Image (tube, rainbow, N blue to C red; front, side, top):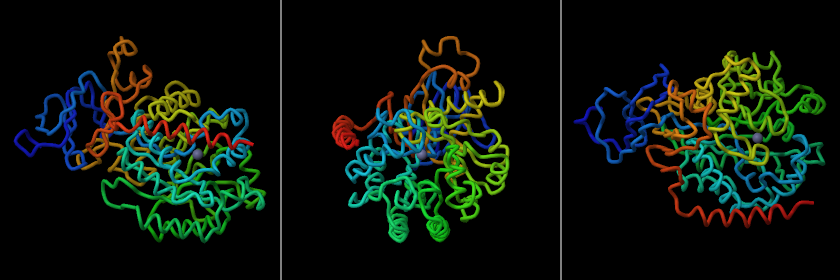
Length: 461
Ligand SMILES: [Zn+2]
């Protein structure tokens, strides 16, 4: 675009540095990004002609990156954040404590928890998020449509996944009967939601995926049928896998396979799938996931909070598996800042492989392009290039916490701080401006959230 061309909708200019994370990983000192019609219409450096624009954001002294992509979350869990009776157990103890509380989830709670959770994510620089909603209590209503309504209001790009559980305690599973559904009901509702909400077009704001909670919470028949339905509807597949050391033994006993083998056995080991965690993946698992192009949502804080271990991120990436970042549910990770997860991924990478094993640029790439790969949107999300989605973040570099950080703005971004987004832009629209959410109904939502969280937590046995 030239200065004489049509005006862009939004221009972010004069950045300290624009880290495009594009195919050439261009970094543009003094750079600018223009967005028109929801898509990036121009990217340039200090010497390039700057287009006219309806709205201009001055990014002087700031780092500009693509919007961060959250590939694993459970928004509703912010209703039971840091819940005292569940804080000391392992993964299975934690689930068993919380399922009876989550059995109170209804449409209003799904809407309000999503609204608050998506706002929190936007403040941390997230522009696209998934959500894995696998608790569908009897009589709870249409929870996924409720959270999609919240996402459209907040303005964050949204990939909800239709979660499911079909094995309750009476079948040897973990959840109580009241929050599981039968296979036919799950499949029919999955199709209904995809037909109603899924948008396959370039720049789509809402896409659905199908997501049994974990291989051990649904039947083998449902795992297979879900993969077949996803193929027929051309949507993606998601689940938790290899999160806990106890899962191997459990899956061997229940299904005769270790978790990653079981994915293959049920038709899930394809590039249509991305899975959360993969901490316990061994060398053979990593090879299989890489060969098949199965994406992995790495959830550093959640893994640490649950004491679950260190995921083989470097090996997965080297094997060819797209690796993105996830905040995971608010009850296990509690904080939902993708900046924080990006920093944690960098630190865990160094802890596992040595100081040189993971740079800030590697972590940024995971948080952006890697996430786009998990969601099947490579080239469309997670990079600032012409034609990609107009999703970006303006990161402040406050003078005290960044004093002396003069030589490398990308490394400084993750080594200094902490920081939150100054501006979060989704499809060319500001969701966060001046470090605050743009919507003025947040106080009302927070009051409703407190009321619902109080009611839910009072259900503890
Ligand atoms: Zn999770």
